[in-house]
Structure formats: structure tokens, C-alpha cells
Image 1 (cartoon, rainbow, N blue to C red):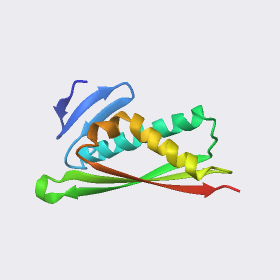
Image 2 (cartoon, one colour; image 1 turned 90 degrees about the vertical axis):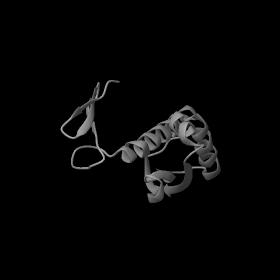
Image 3 (cartoon, one colour; image 1 turned 90 degrees about the horizontal axis):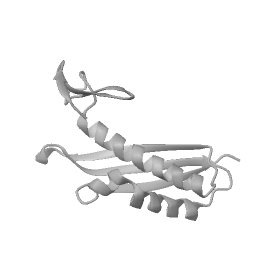
Length: 129
């Protein structure tokens, strides 16, 4: 990827479109937002692939995140809390938790930051019956 400075943001042209990154939300996505989005995107995608391989049918998956930053250390991210909400019928909670652990072990973004950022995960099952 080749980034360039334009209009108060660092930009890169990707296959999906132009990405603008800036410390000021008026000019682009903030770096911490992209960090959290990459962790959620990777973790959620891996989780979904595991469920698909096990033929576990779900009706929906959403992940909410909360970020804890340290203002005394350049606002570095110290903790990311992820809350998974899985919607479906007859879902096995124990199996979903095991799959969540497995997805953590296979998510490259989580593995890349696990020694410097605490990542907490919780799971909620919403029964669609």
C-alpha cells in the first residue's frame, strides 16, 4: 500500500475505494477507529467462518466495542472490549464460547496486538424463537 498526504489526511487508494486517515474526524477515519475496526472485522469474520464450517446456522451477528485509552501515554489503546450478540434458534452457548476462543486464536489482528492491548470478549445469545 502506498499512502499520500492530501487535504489534511493520509490517503490510500484500495480496490474497495479511497481510504482517508486523520487524527481529525473532519478529514478522515481516526487511526484508533481503524485499529478497532480491523480487530472487530477480523475476529467477526473468523468467528463466522468457524460457525459455517461446523454448520451452525445463525440469523444474525453484531459486535459492539468499547475502547479504553490512556491519555498519559499518547492516548494509546489499552483495552478493547468486544460484545458479541448472536441471534438464532437452538444455539449451544458452550459451543459458541469455544468457537469464540478458537476465533481469537486464529484472528491475525488480535494475535498482532495481544501482547500490548487487552482484548475482552463477551457473548450474548438472542433466541429467535
